[in-house]
Image 1 (cartoon, rainbow, N blue to C red):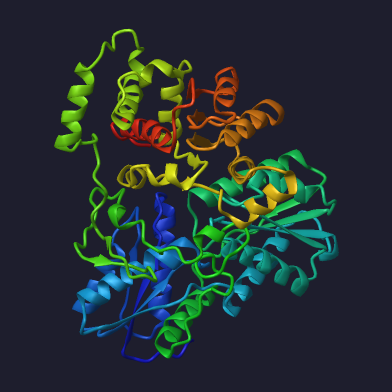
Image 2 (cartoon, rainbow, N blue to C red):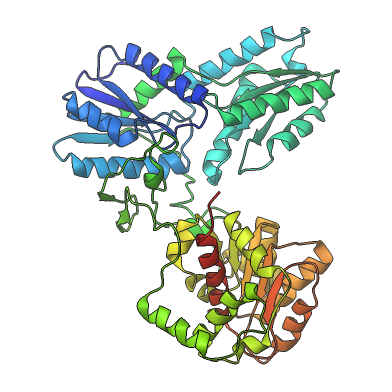
Length: 533
């Protein structure tokens, strides 16, 4: 049992789950922590999908008389939730209760107790095998959750290597249930091809839920299709005194000043390959507007907090505006003038929002006459936005012109790779402009799930068309409206004739970043008025 000062209360911070079984297991885990905490105050809370919320758990501890509170993530690895969302909650609560000392602990990570429990789960799995197979002929497959944080993903690989060497497996293979690659099905098939007589699949998860059940089903499918391979599902870690002790240890470390995150290669403080643009970026929480979601109500705090190194305030407990986009009165008057300023009857109805916004941006009633919109392109763009595809721009001016409120409200990511160090190297190595190299990197990095908005560089349009025609790239929508005199008209004509993708372009030398941004903004406004997934 972990020695914990008697006056420290614990609040176990969980993510929450849509699966009632997952919530039940988490609460059973909290009971184990409470039992091993020896009478100390132990409460819990969730980021989303369940009640109580984290702030409610802290308030309950304060009401019980706690003045020193350790909020410890009930998660395994330090990714977005542990690095951003939970710390912001703690900062807001510290401001709300200035007379209390509220500390934030580290995730359990690869705590020695967690490693011990992994070994137990693997030994239990071996006992369920249909044959006696030595570990020298067994491949260990570790399935991680998968995040956008490469440091957290690499910890899963580190775990697999520790278990492989420590327990004597012939090989280890890592895959992820989402976000990171290789994916689950691909990973299991690759592991089978290593040729071992047995596969033991260890999901590096604390509790059951939708993902664990999906992993179990995938393992059963592989086992059924490979009768010559002994495929065993080891099961997740679940409630156990060892994980409870790991969490209690993290709670103690928080007040001893020893709470360490996996920060040596954190993308927010170090320019990690492929994530350079996120170094030094503000770290903000994303879950305040969905506290308790799925339980019939949400919790609001009404205070402000930030985990940003520049201490920029963010809204806490208040979501971005929902529902139809509301124009400013001046903007509304402008669009009344635009509607009356020319004959719009010969334009298809699906194009009008885009065309009128281009008039608003350019101040030219004749601008729509040169615009080409392929059939179904506006609908394809709105669908891409609702599917939360990445909006890729050729230059930062287009990216900066997008309406930030709508980007946030719709939960979208934007990317402009033109200034990345890797883009410079690609441009130099391949004889490309940086704009064209940025588009090539977007194809390699994001695949087909992009909405491409080009407003400056004809070479970016040329590269996009080449990748579409020669490499089979299929962006969900291509907006090509660059401005200029060198190659501009020619590249836009090639895009217009590119039948493989939905596209919006125009004739002539006119266009520019404001035109491209205005086109995307018209689609964002339409998407904001539709039901959300």
